[in-house]
Image (cartoon, rainbow, N blue to C red; front, side):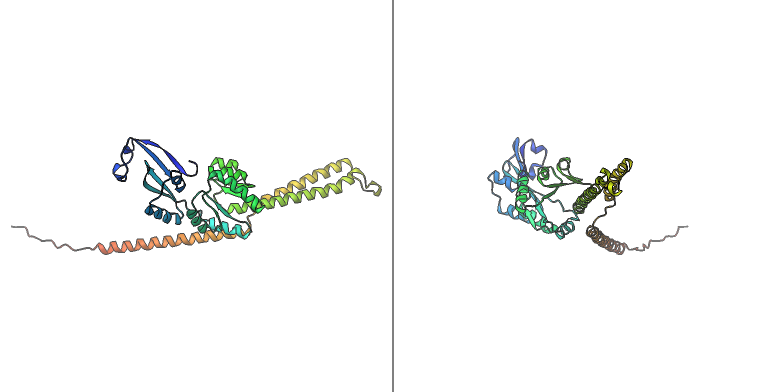
Length: 322
């Protein structure tokens, strides 16, 4: 079931797992109906969670873990927690986008507790949780109608591809799936969320360059065409045919050279400053971790040295009998 879990029938399960690990309420049979899913799937099966299981799930969900439930023949046998740590640059990239006046939201199929924990860690103010893959397109449409603005979607999974296609600008992470990259408008080669800000800034610079080229070509032709047509010949201003051809080639050359200046593009100072700050913070964390490891190793060596004492062994000496 898309977005909720999987279910099926497994035979000879006793040959795969140890039967002693199964709950006492689970009976050994030839065929087992296996269900692995979230709370929504359990609701579909009209099952209520025991209070202890529900509290344990809430505890893991508050830590940002996705919790799935394993059922064998309708009996809860295990909880499977999945944790996907956020990228190290997520919080810094989100803060940078918010400084630029961009509203950042989290769109996920996880439950509200897990989504809220992740959003707090990444400093994301707006959260849309428990959104199935089939509902992500509708959510993108509703955001477009609500804010009357361009909506960009950043994703890397198969489930994100319909939303990437629906968004005004679809941005796919280069390390994501091929389906997501096919549906996206922009593909980020590096696995860095700072490149989202760089892509936005580069697109603005490119549009400004296009407008500049358009204005330049328009002004150049407005001035050059009357001269080439001979409108100013009564005042002694005219161009020979080869001169007009050279002037037209010069116009195209100027536009091409102006466009090639984009190769000199550099990241915005805000992005460079955030990247440098992140590198310094990670370096401090790594240095602290190395110092802690060295301290632990030194303490361990001191304990080993104190435990190893050289004890002199006094043996009995005997003289050879004559």
